Image (cartoon, rainbow, N blue to C red; front, top):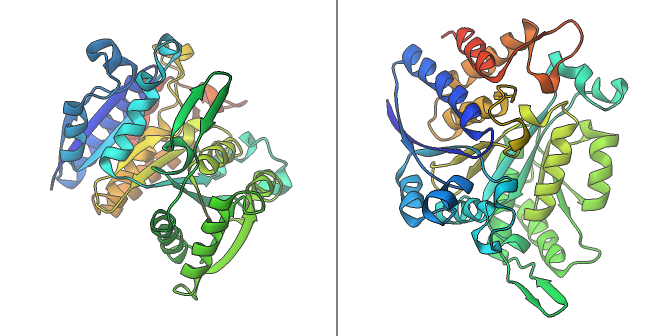
Length: 354
């Protein structure tokens, strides 16, 4: 099978971690008889430097025409002073909107080998942590009107019934494939948009009688993620809440460097990226953890390319790497063997078997 993958290496540690994921994908292609063709795309700070635009239309078009997109990370202090509409992150928002990917799925899972790395108490971790946050991605306050007039700034949070319904269905369908528990997170005691959110989710629940729906206010959810994360199976929420909660959830696993994500819309062409940033302070030092990017590539195989066996092979290779006691600096602990970014990719590649 031939698949065209648009590759956004981006800024900071982005090129380093993406290179390791491509290394692993190439080994998968060799083992399973696939062909992965890669098209490089400039986005973020590197695109600002090259084109004066964080995502030129020609680069966006490459992504839209691909079978899926693999992204490292964008941004950095170098571009902090550019005008708001030209910041590297604006390229990412434009990419999501252009691709029509409205559902961002971020798994939170503690690998058994890394249980001691979690900042949570052992008795909490021992209950098991394995849930997914389904975040609406191209609506809400990030895509509303933004304006500053004098000493007053305004950001508009707006959702339509159709936008809520389509992400709600992703939440229910995801829960149906897991443990049939869906927690809808909002702020309906304050926000009209959240009251509409709650109304639509409960209307959808009538179509999914096999899924148990619960409601939770976002501030309570933030507390429950650290107090009792084992209660969650699938969480569905709006854009800003999902952004914040998924970053919080990633830290209870021991390292943000371990967490992949997928962004999907109506087609199988998805956007796959680790949830961490570009970490310019460690760029070029060969110490970044590429596992989040490698696992994002596994999600691409599973959800966009219908290659579940190949995705399992990558996840099994990561587990074998951890079993062998190898760790990058962010998850290093006593008795383990510290390795750099490139060596991590090489080792995971070596553990890949069909």
